[in-house]
Image 1 (cartoon, rainbow, N blue to C red):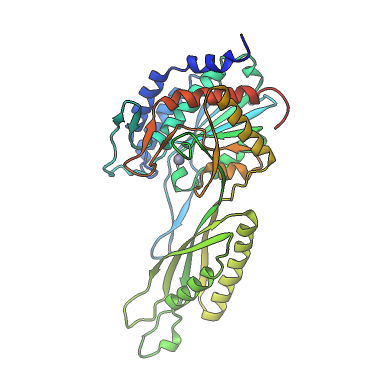
Image 2 (cartoon, rainbow, N blue to C red; image 1 turned 120 degrees about the horizontal axis):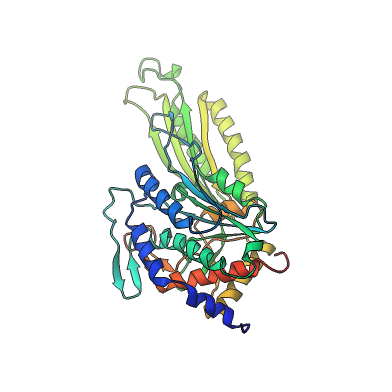
Length: 402
Ligand SMILES: [Zn+2]
């Protein structure tokens, strides 16, 4: 085989018709993050599909996740199972490939159908984000298994059921599978429809702070009350003041309160933060502790903190940059021009990077308008991206460390 013929041979070997058929079938299954029945169906379909690869497929129970209700109570939120495939776990050099089976479209959302926008563009829920990407993983690995030397390396595939709500029920699993891996590839759609990758990402965190005051009559004995709404309002101003150039703080919602003639004894404040750096993330955490202690002391209220950073910031270090360069070079060998831009979004790539593993997290299809009924996938990108990943894995399987 001539040196340049290998990439083209990979591309020629991808069965684009089979890929398209699978994506159409998978997108027709509703997998809104809260649709446990739909996720269960999808997990079964994926387990069957990935059984075509060597190794063992397993459906893993979600980790328990709680949330805070409007009346301040902690309750458990159900989640779907995650799919894990482990191939040659004893190999010294191993990779992890990740994707998610859930979408942002609940079972009662009007956007459920797949349809054509033009000859090359498919519109449908999850086509780009990321059932197309899941199919790219499957076919890239099928192709990779035919490559000489692939049996010297191993890999895990993890497809979670809860990425769109922050991977709270799969975060531990992601970290467990990422640790010790040589490199990671995640199959979010490209950042731009031309195939541009997402580079560095900020992080995100979500908090619910429950404040318990003491109720009293607003006219007769207000001094005996401890006003939870006043304490929550004070808290809003204090956390908003913690925003700086490297972190945004968005107080989003206050729930609670009571009748006009009652000093309210309950308030729940929800807020989101977006740290741009690990330093900003850690600084905010310490500042929040101090602010909550001050609120508690000055307003004589109970304060309960729930939540935190779910996606640490993802800077691109030297090792990760070498992986980006490799993806670009493999793209060039296949006739694909691949660049990158920083992204304001977050994904499982954030959590993988936090484990010290180099990751490129937009290896999925080319597409766009995700999280909207205009979501689309560019169909030829199924083959392009499957060949790209197969080539990247081939190059990663030999040679020096990243
Ligand atoms: Zn996604």
